[in-house]
Length: 451
Image (cartoon, rainbow, N blue to C red; front, side, top):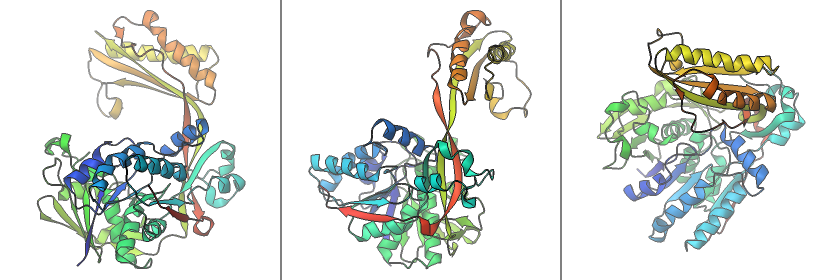
């Protein structure tokens, strides 16, 4: 039965930069490579970059990945790459990749997926019920004038279409993470978009590999026991035309593919396991059969599938004021008490100046800051005082950064760790999840000659 191999070597924007080329070197027979760059906050970062430079707005790291793959392509590799590195500007990303390939003497056809950007639609219709915040129920009109991005999680159809049109590299914006794999499978095997059982299993496969090394031992509950985490191998998915899956990794690499790592990744961020919502189908994880079939080989079959929702989820972001965070180390007797008093002083000075901040957080790292209220307070000889504030008014946050420095001479003895200087003031972006009707999202593809 025909089988394809799909690897993933980028779980987020900032993952190991040399992982894609390394994975291909370790697993030369790889057919497809998926790369995931977009977390919810990523679009806000890209929007700021595009404000400063109109030709920006995409994950520039991907251009370096393309350069790193050029030697393998020159040597005859038939690898095809599918990614969402296009962010807010897939066209500019494709042009940059085209230039990089031309400089490397490689010709590849580059496909672009457009249509996920629905910012104008939300701005023009802030009163629509479906645009209410999915978590709070707040109407969009409360933040409509501060929106900076809004992107629908589109599915794998456009990815499959671009591959059908001959693209060697597919660059999209906000395609749902598992849909990168689904689009590849539909292209490779010619499945119908109503063959929900196969689409569901492919969605499960995409979900397993979408976070890169998480499927091969990263953040595993037994991470200290995982072999060679410094040389962790990235996951490879073997898929046949029935959508039966085997998860594996290159031989000779660290990490592991085991029932534990695969099951933990299966449960990662899925919500209702009987009704996992994807743009391509609904998935029932409760019918899955997971089995070890060899060293670093785990099979996954039997997902239940049904028709997808009539809506796409939208990830929108809006400006929500400013923030700053600063840290000081306090050493010596009564370190925790001194840290607490110091935190109180900072916030008290802001109140006296009439600049009480809307939100503040005072933490004492090393004193149960991550498990506040659960464990008794330890006796410490050192702790790190970390104070974070946020407010719609920039002047409030700037005043906080100045007050923190004053503790150097006006605070407790044993205070140190101010080498980094005054904390910076940063814009805050808040997340706005909502829904949009599928027929209002117009998705298109185009493929250029490359080179």
